[in-house]
Image 1 (cartoon, rainbow, N blue to C red):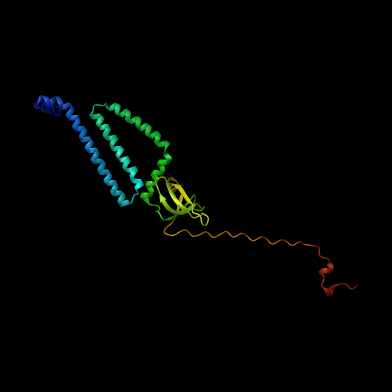
Image 2: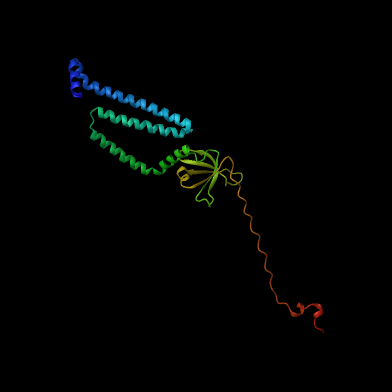
Length: 228
């Protein structure tokens, strides 16, 4: 039914318009696809901006999110445009699977970096600690670990001002974000952790007195000494 209506519509149009229909229709579809992609990108970026203002996302996190949204929309729009231009769907699918395979290999090759990026997103959203908090990253709850004040959180590392540095020196601990979610984190909010008492050196043991042989005469009292 739709095809017959289209043929009927074409028959009513002038001949010079009919010659250009094969160009006008795909061209208008391409323009609509590009406009829809542009509007979708603006809408998603606005939503991300509102979410960042609500959850207080840092600028370091907004840049990769906006870049990911932009490239996903561009890739999708490009595939649709190529399809409207007559490129075979089989060719597009083959190209897509090839890019997906390369992307999967790159994903596993850069897993450590990507895991830090994902854990940074969790730190910014879940907020297990904030900048200014004093934390201690432990292997277990019984063993001491890296302790300090959180001074910076970026996409790869959480930086602590080391509490164990020598007096008069400032040291920094850069802990990968993925390690934060693999360890026990002790949080001291708004106050530094209590100072550990210094270990006092043990007192030296008293020397043992030599035990000598005591003569029976010296051991007896003076009244009990034998007469000469």
